[in-house]
Image 1 (cartoon, rainbow, N blue to C red):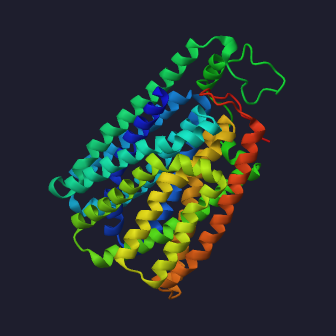
Image 2 (cartoon, helix red, strand yellow; image 1 turned 60 degrees about the horizontal axis):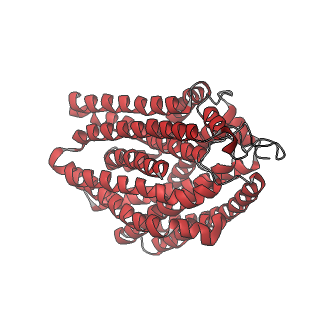
Image 3 (cartoon, rainbow, N blue to C red; image 1 turned 30 degrees about the vertical axis):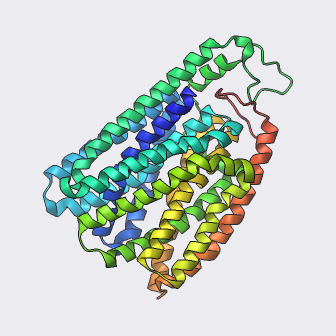
Length: 447
């Protein structure tokens, strides 16, 4: 229970810090010009390529508590630099600072959330994840509501730049939760006798658990993971399962990018005042998270239990098929608001926790390296495909409605991919036969 509540608090501070920044980032993207969005996406991908190798090196050489803390504090330092630039530089430089801020936040949000869920998949086993990840995500939704409400209420009276220090404080609180979680898991491991630990996944089935219990598993969890900087890439290439997750992520991101561009176009032609636009983005975030909190509190765990991982992974693609079809017939602000709210709430409340269960059956190195590669580079690669495809279709003369209809069958393929992944996860979890214990595994070798 203490680990569960600390995990909720960790995600609460993490997402509240991000959601203070998200409306500021989105407004800066619109202010930079909707026609420049594909280039913003390209810059994000390049920056992602530069950041991933140093992160993989940290994962190889440092214990998880240290590399997570170092990564978060690196981003905190960057935030303070942006705050100083926005305060001290002349207003004429704000467009380029805003573009750099957009690139940075787009990298930041994927890294910090990917690290969070990798940590959760490392601490909890598959069956625990099915029960608990929805509740843990609830902590993030509460944080997102607090962050979005903070920006929605203070952006106009204080100005967006003055909200950045609030995000800095929240991210430091997330770092403290990481440290407490690691200390708690180590303390609980000491309370258990050596013989009481379960069989650790990765040991031969016939090998007895005696002498390799929770304490050894925890010690192994806090040791450097090792391996090469490019191990994440190699792990993805040799695993059909991880390649399937890559495909699922690509299709998810392409659909999300199409909708993001349509949102930018509709809002750009509806609102002219920058502060009003920032507040409107924050209100969308607020609506998304109010809906998500109800779903996470009462439905997510039950949906995964009743439907299984496979069918639950298909729910968000179904929403997108219906939503893009609706936008095709009526590309209006009201339709956009409803579709974007349902899509993002469905992602945060149902699809994301279910997707993270997929990683509970892979090795620790794959959790941190391959998962980070998928959550960052592959994700932003999907952004690129979606952004430039959208620009190409616009250049060819397709209207917003026509592009929405193009997105509909893409979501259909995404639906099929989600169902296959869920079935594969169930098979790997059954093979692993991991007991329901909160013991980190030193190796979860998956065929």
